[in-house]
Length: 95
Image 1 (cartoon, helix red, strand yellow):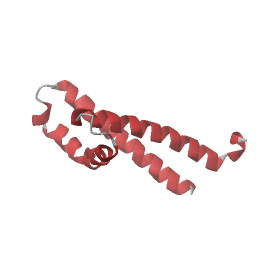
Image 2 (cartoon, one colour; image 1 turned 30 degrees about the vertical axis):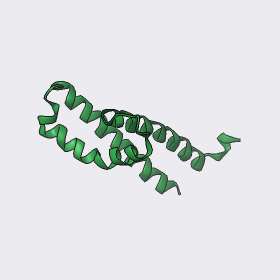
Image 3 (cartoon, rainbow, N blue to C red; image 1 turned 120 degrees about the horizontal axis):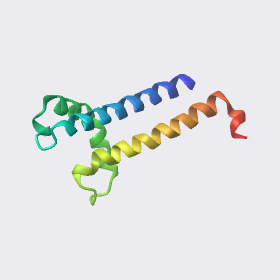
Image 4 (cartoon, helix red, strand yellow; image 1 turned 45 degrees about the vertical axis):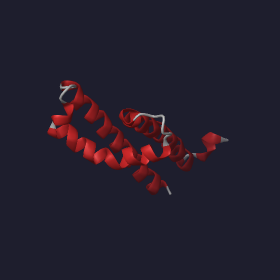
């Protein structure tokens, strides 16, 4: 169980880092970010996460805000996985 949680924890962290990288890449040329090859590659890598979040979010959430919602969900999942890994390793801390 600890190994599974470690793998999922690292995958969530990697996706979060890719979101941050895409944001930083977009900052350098905000109006023309859709023409930037690196920005589009990162968007392609993040498209499965964005599609999954689009399915669970209400229709009122605009498509341009889906990556922000996805990043927020990943952040809280990351925090929950830290707590889960800590619970598996040291359950006495939760008593």
